[in-house]
Image (cartoon, rainbow, N blue to C red; front, side, top):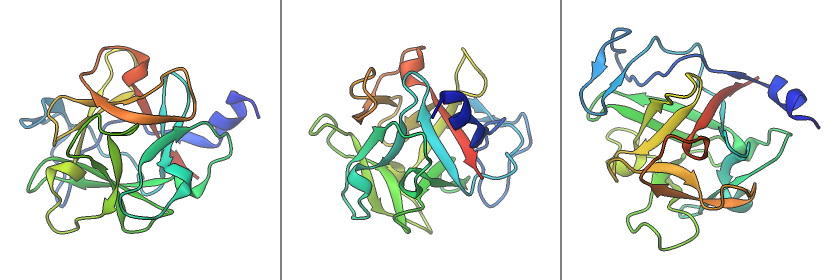
Length: 193
């Protein structure tokens, strides 16, 4: 399937939105992550997160639903349920977003404590619902190159952003490293219909 046909299966979310029980006003600065909040997108209940450099999508390795499973990135023009995530926005206790995998219900994307200990610095853990820790919270920063591209930063590891372990490969682990302003660190978050 061509890239154009695959792109037609998803619609790009037009604006960054990190909110929770109460949304900040559009244009209000976020003091924790230095991002200006925009109006919330219409629907982030079913999204796909794809790397801009190689079009690989995030999913639990081998489609696993188990806690502790590594997150990998794989190309697949057919949108699989394992590649679909729900974005949960938080303002308190910390301003950020949580990503819940729709194939592994109740499991969220989490930064590992010890970075560089495996081929992937992120994995699945049971979602913390009432008070998510920093390991499950992420900051979205709009790329200076393209407004529909985001750098996804770990609140647990400060300024470290998601990056494919092997940027030229579609089947790769995902690392948390200091970001550069390149497409290797940029991701799209697209609603899946």
